[in-house]
Structure formats: C-alpha cells, structure tokens
Length: 523
Image (cartoon, rainbow, N blue to C red; front, side, top):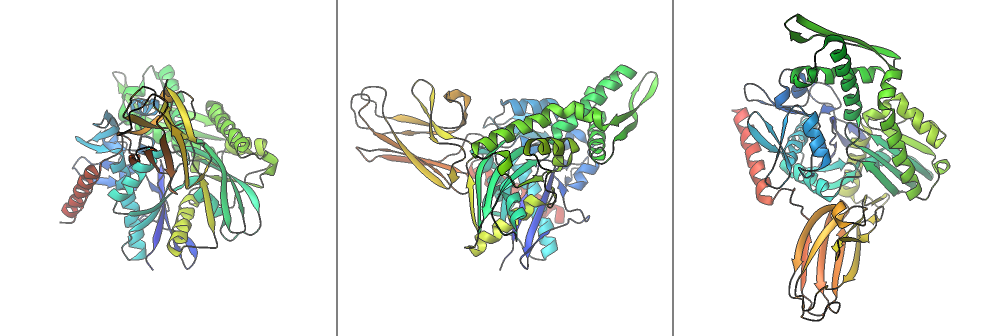
C-alpha cells in the first residue's frame, strides 16, 4: 500500500511524518534535522533555495529570502495582518490582481500558495528520499482558527507541490491524535498550540475510539515571531541609546538581530541569562559599532508578558465554549516551539491548576497526528472516529447590513444547515448571496468568503418569495453554499472561492513553471 505522509506546514519550521509498521516516524531531512525551516530564497546567482539552505544565507540576502509567509496566506492585502507584515518583513509584499498579498524577490512575483507549495514540495522530496518511492497522498495541517479562504489556499499549495491532499486537519486536532495513540480510557484534554506564527487552543474529549473536539479558538497572528520581534525592538532601542544609531533601516542588521533574538529566547528557556553579542553590527564615520547586551529571563518575560496573558484569555474563552471547567481537564498538552517558554508553562499551570503534560514532542506531534489521520483515511479505520468543529460562524449578509448566522462556531463537521430568506423589494427577480465568516452581527465586520447571484425568482410582492439557502462544511472545513427558489425550483450553488484564492488556470500555470524550473536544475 502506498504511504500517506503527514505534513505540519509551520510558520517557522515544517515537519513530515509517515506511519511504518503501525508506528509513526518523523522523517529527517538530508542534514539529519527532523524539522525544516519554512524559508524560501533566490540566491544572487538565481538558484532557488529551500529550508536550511535558505536560512543560512538569509543575513546576506535578506531582501530575497522569504520567511513566515504562512501568516499572509489567504488574507486580503488591506488586512491589518498583511499591513503589519509589510512593516516587519525584509522582503517586498505587493498587492496582487486578486487583492491578495504577493511576494517579490529577485524581480519575480510569487503568490503565497506558491511559496507554501515550494515548501511542501521540499517536504515531499524529503519523504521520497527516505522511503525510496514516490509519494502522492498527504494530510496537511492548518491552524484551527484558519478561515475557509486560508484552508482553500493551503489545499491549492498542496496541489502546486504535486500532492493529493486527502484531508486538511486542524493542528491541535492532529496533536490530539498523536497524544491519544495507544491510550485507553476517557479523558478531556486541552491542546495548547503556540507556534511560530499562530496560536490555537482546543478542548478535546477522548475515549472508546472517539476523538471529539468540543471547542476551539485561536489567533492566526500571534506566535514566536511576535515574541522575537519584542526582543528585537528592545535591542534596537538599546543600541540607539548607547550608540546613537537606528538599525531599523539596515536590512542585514535587522536579520542579524532577528537571528540573535530567536537564539537568545531559546537559550532563556533553560538558562536565567544569556548575552546577545553582534560585532560590527553597524558602521559610521567614527568606525565600526558592536552590540553586546546581557539579557535575563526576567527582562524577556517582561517584554512578552501581555502576549502570554492574551493566550490565556483565549484559553478561558475556549474552556467556557466547551462547557467545561479547568478542573475537568485531565491533561494539558503543549505543542509548538514557543510553548517551551517557562512563562507559558507557568501561566498554564496557574489557569488549569496543574503542570503541562510533557509526553509529546512539541515540534513533532502535529506531523505525527497528520500521518495517523492519513492512515485512518486510507484504511477507513472503523476503530477510530474523529469529530472536529468549524472554528468560526458562517452565514450570509442580509438587508440593512446585518449578518445572519446559519452555522455557529464550534459546530461538529461535516455539517449541512438551511434557512429560508425572502426578497426586500416588490417584483425582485434576483438576490445576491454574500457568504460571510465571523462573529460580528454587522456583516461588514466579518470575512467575505465569496458571493453569487440567484436569478429567476418569480415576480411577487416583497416578502412572499421563499429562497432556501443551504451551507455545507466538509471534513476539511471547506464551505459550499446553494440557494434555491422554492416556487420555481431555480437553484444556484458554489464551492466558496474568495477573490484572494487562485483560479484553476493560475494553479496550472504555477505547477508548469515549477516543473520546468526543476527540469532546468537537473540538466
């Protein structure tokens, strides 16, 4: 039987795993590392570099090195998150023709699904080298709080990578599968997932072969990158005060600071103090300037305490949504690299009244869970049932700018729900269905996933025609919508595709370009 790989497509690092002889194996890359940096670059001589090769040259080629692009995928260019990324990233982010963010490096423009596809293709290659055979089937993980557009874009990335995506699975749900492998008995578990770019919390009930997500919540723009940024800002301000030089405009210095901040943060998870030492970080008329600054764990915790508390506030909301109390939770499973921080463990212990479980590898659990899910799908495993939920409410825009919820967040998927709407004007023969995702009662405050028009409604006074609108959410969390006039039987349906996703023609063009590049590299 062909292998199904599980891929944790992370903001900072990615990981791939496979089930062999019933046991999950995390696959090391050519350098022996079990995680690969989610980085892509074009070198000075035009070569494409992925993973560790891209990371090693990032300092000297920062403008042409892409990192943390997962934070951009499936978003609108004008969104707050994209605008923040423009201010923070050393590479150029521009508005695409679909009002989506696109990345320009070495004079070439890339879509965000294309960048993700390049990283996924590298993970596919790592798996193929290890297994000695071609791999085509995969389960790919996404943050639980990703909306429909972000999920669609991730699925597009899989297609660009040459993968048949069997399932898009939420990261904390995958971690729950990894934790639950071989366990007996019933328990309620909290999965706290704080990675490089995103934060998720899920409350999961496990027992008798059933893994049921009771509630999930999160923030798709909160993670290790933000913790690093706080320390970078601290270093910049110290250097400006001591040397009178602002390093914000020096991209090479910024990349050095970013690397040093990440290393110092990691060191402070096991030590009380460390030192950031960057010789020759700047030059002016007086000569070279060096940055040398001791950093204590207390200083770092003071810089990021509000973000740690923000995650606990989200945890509290999720626990309430699951209708449980902190005392009902038997284990708190921590995944994602940033979850190693002592401050995070302390905050979790205070909220739940118990220390976090340390029986899973924070970097590997999500990929392991993804490959377990892949095997369940291939073997149609009847001994294990996975019940996940939709992270955000879904509905349509109605008259007066209101949002009519059809499916509430934390509803078990797959799910189908319908509601009858009517016309707002006499003799109205068409209605525009605007599909939204979010929690605000005001339509404009929610994410527009797509829209379509139902024509052919019978002419009648307003309020008389009955239009049946149905929402379907599949096991991937991807939405399809249909609308039908009950009198005429006229129907219109779509799989929701927001303007920021790629068309089938664009995907095919990107696949051809990437295939052609690989052929050229081999010649």
